[in-house]
Image 1 (cartoon, rainbow, N blue to C red):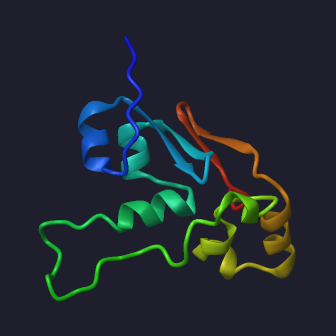
Image 2 (tube, one colour):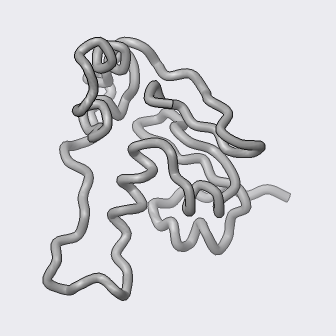
Length: 122
């Protein structure tokens, strides 16, 4: 039996699911076994999403981590990677690299037996 659970609550996903698809603006950006994705995220969005989860050890005086910017509306999606405008990784890259991110949808990269990611930085 299969169940599709759509959630931003990765704690629930960790407890219920065996596999996870991380999506951003309608595109899957990372896929794999839940433990692998949560322990070794590769895509910049997955990393940012996980860093935004508060823990019991967090200092109550510290601000929570957030992902800068906003999800674009469908009519403003970049031609390439949909995370382009919010991606911290691409900001430190060359103009040529940034143009590739802006113009080309990243291909799937097989990182391990059951871990796939869609990003030009890989």
